[in-house]
Image (cartoon, rainbow, N blue to C red; front, side, top):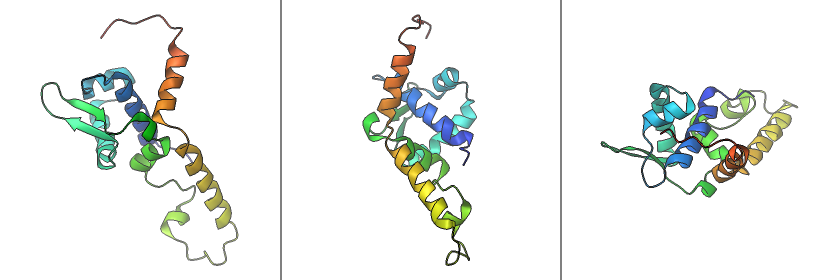
Length: 145
């Protein structure tokens, strides 16, 4: 399985929002600057994240995006499911297969897909943030905003 840019960018966008939100929502333009993602693509990615209840939007001059849940309650699986859809290694698991009664390898694909779900469900946005802080703690401070 190869994750699309939507799933990878959705994870980066939520992590960016969490890092920057503080007391104020994070503007789309700020996310674009931080992550190197166009504002148009951010908008496309944010919609399913909003629909899944992972992020809220705030309109107006000081508007932007905020996490809708605590970072400990958002898993990588939640983000991928919202942005990519259900995680299956092969299409026949989601679409159904006319050979499912006789397909001897379908259980293999199902088991591997289940393992991916379990793995991604164990990683929270908070854990990603903590890892980010640990990895960047020895870098010089950047005061440009």
